Image 1: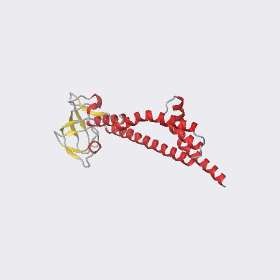
Image 2: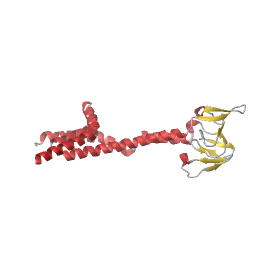
Image 3: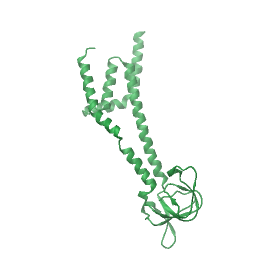
Image 4: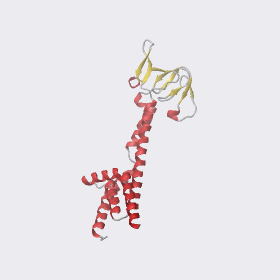
Amino acid sequence: DMLAGKVVGMAVAAGAIWLSGLAVFRKGLSAIVRRDLNINALMSVAVAGAFVIGQWPEAAMVMALYSLAELIEARSVERARNAITGLLALSPPQVEVRQADGTWTSADAKTVAVGATARVKPGERFALDGRVTAGQGAVDQSPVTGESIPIDKAPGDDVFAGTINQSGALEFEVTKPASDTVLARIIHAVEAAQGQRAPTQRFVDKFAAIYTPAVFVLALAVAVGTPF
């Protein structure tokens, strides 16, 4: 019965390690082949070693927790990317612009020059930042500023790309190019924050570059030099 229990325990642990750590083992093996002793290589060797010496529950638990941490990190990155995608969708690519002869035509927001007069109808989003020159209406600024109630706009008031005109057609003078709107700056800030590592993370990376190989070598020395 005890032998059967051990076999079952080993099988369950092996299954858990396989399900949760297959990707880690692949990365770890690739790292070892490249002689890059990173955290995946260390985890692979540690879990494999624990399993070999009979510490099946510990091996399975370590791999499961590490895989969970990897999943949480991946989800965080995905949420940041989705946030950027959502921000990009706030600003429409086209905007109605008044021509020299007084007619209105649709134009690419990126090509509209500062000083041009644009128009937004009720229910439409502003594609550019500007200052109202004609018309009155309420604008939902919550997508950009977070304000919970619509803000009344009249000639002289500022409007922002990504906000929604809820009532009344508004004409406005473009005050910023598409690349320099408040919304564009928010997007750039989010992208920069996603691409940069915090000082703590940079320190951890530098520390891990020394710590991981050192632990790897020490563990190997202990395994080779200590009889089971």
